Length: 69
Image (tube, rainbow, N blue to C red; front, side):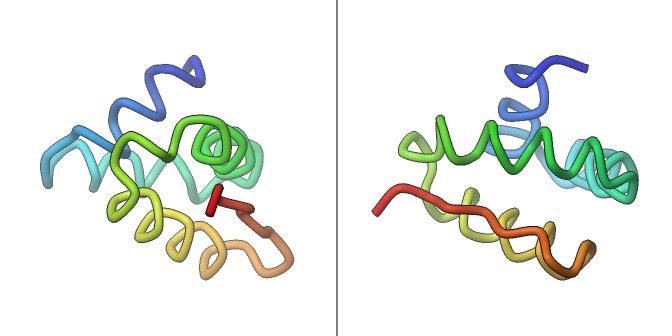
């Protein structure tokens, strides 16, 4: 799945898409991919980006998402 698709699902998806994305992010590489996409494109929907950053960091200890200020 591309960074763009992951970012679109995270920032613009509905509950069903978020549930599917959560399942995908159980795999560390996908979580890391979404984390980097959020770091680059989070300024669009910062509330959703902050929420997903928290989910990813909870799922994978040691994973840090550096969102833009």
